[in-house]
Image 1 (spheres, rainbow, N blue to C red):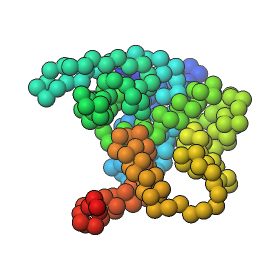
Image 2 (image 1 turned 135 degrees about the horizontal axis):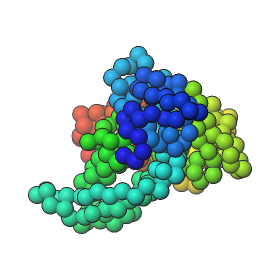
Image 3 (image 1 turned 90 degrees about the vertical axis):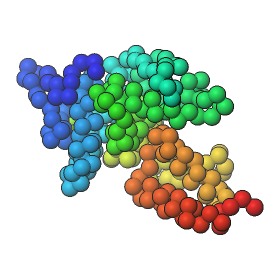
Image 4 (image 1 turned 180 degrees about the horizontal axis):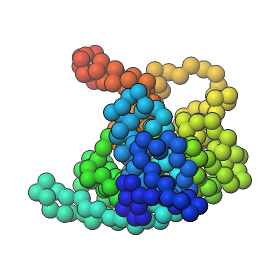
Length: 269
């Protein structure tokens, strides 16, 4: 990790503040300081997952710190690398990365296997290396990866708009930016709302743009259109590129269970 470790001190006007997983919900940090506390945000995510009663507050604070940290120059410009190994443990690809640039880009050559399909081995290596680099985790953690997958798109949007991210009282605060998108992001009432704006989705009071560029003509979506969208969302979640809500994940699991339990009903014609 760059500056700071798991419980690294952050300078606050001449005083030293020690941040822990228990005090993260009340933290006030700059983006640079948040970057140094990324390992702590990861630990808070893990701890929050284990302690359901207090998970929401700690989880939200951890996501805020993660987002601010990822939005910093320290993270965005950081060079790092990892190896993709074969079944025999031999290194067949050495990958160089910069910040979070490679996240979500499946067109990169090293992310594909010899048949041109997305390589699960490469995906797994990337997940582990990213969490080791930015969170000091020796192996990939599902809770941390899910949270990081939510934080990265928001951090990218913050940087794209030239905004400044800080943490005040455990909450993400944004300033700067001149576009309508930046205004909407700074006015977002929650991280969930910010995530929607960052993705280009409409707010709760406006109709979201329909998929595939189709016009909203008021008609009901066909079963094929609904299932195509569901398949894309589930595929994105499987790759760690789409952060679905618990209710959405519950429906995905239900669909998977139904298909597995009724193979004949879903067999090819």
